[in-house]
Each structure stands twice: as structure tokens, then as C-alpha cells.
Image (cartoon, rainbow, N blue to C red; front, side, top):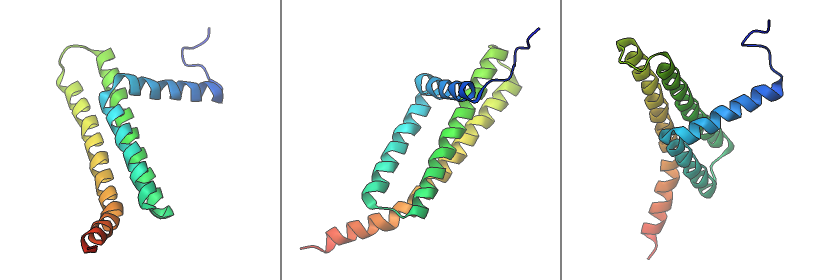
Length: 131
């Protein structure tokens, strides 16, 4: 008898992972918002011509937020599958997963400020000095 969790090929593993990303995007407003903010960050980084190291920091920050949001979505889905009634331990798990997203997003904001503020300050100062 074959088990429920049989080994899959790499092709199937990637297909399942992309299905999970599509599912998160289609069902979670927060994921779509984070993705839109990430697109804006990439656009601004391109316009401001950030360095390779800064690109690395921004990409890591974006990946951290999207991964945290995906884990949060997975935990929410699992909690709904386990029990639809209120349970304090499920609430605690969901709150901690949300806290992880908040921490990741806060960290990403700090990284963005570190990368963008000096460039934006120079840009704004340059406009202010022109007659």
C-alpha cells in the first residue's frame, strides 16, 4: 500500500511550491500587498541605481517578508483545518505567526530606509539648491 506522502520528483516538488505561491497570492490580500510593495522597492532601487550589496540587502529583505507571509498563511490554513472553533493555543500560534510577519516587515522597512534615505536626501537636496 502506498503511503499518503510518497516521494516526488523535483519537478513535482517545484510544481507544488509554485501552487502554494499562487494560492497565497490568490487568497491572501496581505501577500498581494507585500508583493506590490516589493515591486515598488525594485523600481525605486533601479531608478536610484543602488549598489550590488544594497541590491542583496533589498532582495533578502523582500524574500524575508514574502517567506514570513507565506508561513503565516500556511499556519492560518492549517489552523482552520484543525479546528474552526476558538482555541487559545490556535490563537496564540496565529498571533505568533502574525508577529513574525510584523518583525520581517519592520526589518525590511529599516533596510529600505538605510539604503534609500541617503540617496533620497541627496536627490532632494540637489533640487532644493537649484535656482
